[in-house]
Length: 440
Ligand code: GDP
Ligand code: MG
Image: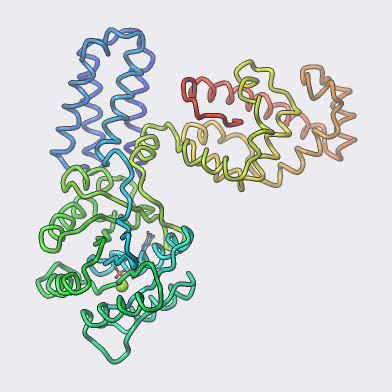
């Protein structure tokens, strides 16, 4: 997602970053490029127009152009406005204070309702909730089976009524049953149609008035681009929805739907789905999306991941070391060990777009880590602290000690130098971000 857009915006804004002074003309020229990039990403025309206008107005404000870092400020404004475009803050599900919370799933056929129902149940289970999944797509027996399999996989309660083809009754009975049995969430999966028709809407409206859902979610396929916006509009007008789940974001390289829906319809995207697996559903974070588009990486996700698995005390101090460039092989070893705890190195690197480009030439095979550890273990204390003393004969000794070839030692030394450079870049990048304490 956002691939083309990200590249274009980053190139355009990169041109502004370095400039010491910025004129209105520079801003104008850059905004023309921004506009084209957004339109090419299939973002709604009016949204693009308003967006560019706002960025321009804020950018040619006195304090921006006269500041010491006008380019950076414009980038920040673009980032802010992208975030606002997607709703600013993450929008959560309405959870009823009196359980069960009833969630009604709606959407066109094939949008991903049933799959998403399973994913949502999984997500809620992970938060300690106890969901019941209700099969109200009575027209296709396969849809009932599909939901049952998903419920099994997630370990959620499954509810269906074999000889009943009245979805309103089934939904009503299910909510009553959930109350009796003590389930705190009821997710009702419904039938879709290929196109919006009155019959579909009436059925949904009837379910709505019978079970009074706390949350009506519309699942839309991100790959439909601008069409997604119209679908949201139509469902909201006919049924009234509380939020959107954008499915199949993994197949959408442009991002038009993700960027237009909130601005056009005022309906928040609450989750996005990026695959067919049960774990492929994430809350939709406008700030992280904006950061991703501008190549600032998904730093927050990374930090969350780091905080959940890494011994933060063990890496304290690396931060200042990376600024001062006195990072040595002992630190490198420590860093490797921490990275290993966080999972695959490749998946981490992919979260930082800027970094993934840098790392292209660097081997990110996780098995390499074991070899690297062996090599560092074979270095003396002095060599680890001061790698520049490692000459030919030392290399030979280290190679023998670790069971490697000299060229592998050379490669590690080179890799180490690149890491140092990269860390310096990262530390420049994160300057001013208090929360960023990460060993890259
Ligand atoms: P429904 O008719 O709205 O219930 O749609 P389904 O849940 O049956 O999904 C239709 C198809 O889309 C299935 O083949 C799903 O596996 C697939 N699908 C759903 N969500 C995603 C997603 O986020 N990414 C991808 N790649 N496929 C998805
Ligand atoms: Mg279905």
